Image (cartoon, rainbow, N blue to C red; front, top):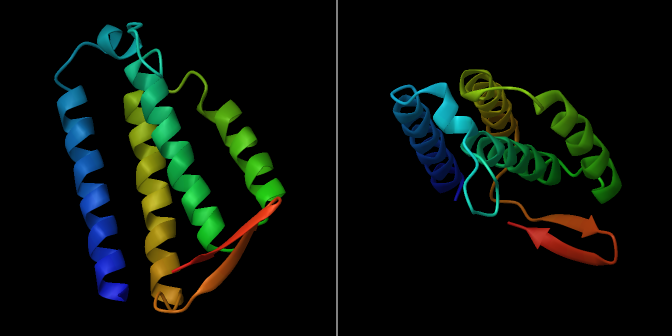
Length: 123
């Protein structure tokens, strides 16, 4: 299981890097152009993706639901105004944190996670 988790995460990193490579080929204005979608711009979508990576890492580390919300709220403020290249650096940083987590964690073990009124087991 551990090898699968690491392999899938490596694929995630590879796919994100491919996105950033393609974004280098378009003018910056395209990343800020509003489109009818869940997220109004490419940049806002990248910010959401980066926050989501942080949420998953924090949850796997056993952070409380409340603490995850606080940390991600602070991260959201830090990401405001950041363009694709700055966000790419954020993906690299969280990627290193994931790799450290994987190296120090028994990924075959079950870990309980409580989310407010709900709980689940991350496996």
